[in-house]
Length: 198
Image (cartoon, rainbow, N blue to C red):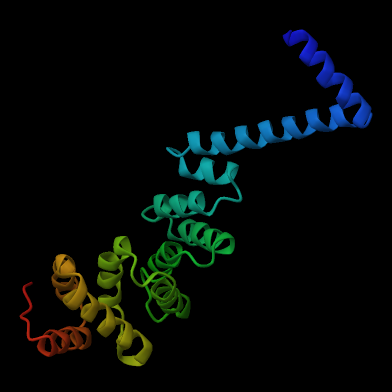
């Protein structure tokens, strides 16, 4: 019975077009190869650089590679974050990574401040970025950039009014903040009638 069905299927396939069977085999082989490639990149996640190199079009692999390179080679991390952003320009985490990599030694670097701003614009409410990004922003010289001042004010206000569980992040940011940024944070607490608990 099964053999008869298979014969009927093959007979109908040959009647459709002489190219049907080779085309179906080719499509199946291509699908299998793409699946194997995708899974191979996933299997290498423990080695971010290899995974990113294999899964060349997957931004999340380049993002992981950037974070793995951050301590040893900020330049390699910057390149990985840039690659992730080319593939996924609306990823707030990739923008934050680029800001961290480019701003490590020089916050006057325009790439660092632009990347930090883009991290806020593309992922303002991403809960996984709120605390580390606030700590990074508190260390930036905001006196020359009113946009950064506004971002700092808005982020502190957001935590005080809508995410009190993240209030500890404000304390951490306050400890590492420049004097100008400390005044901004203090003003937000005063407006909210709350006290800073370092």
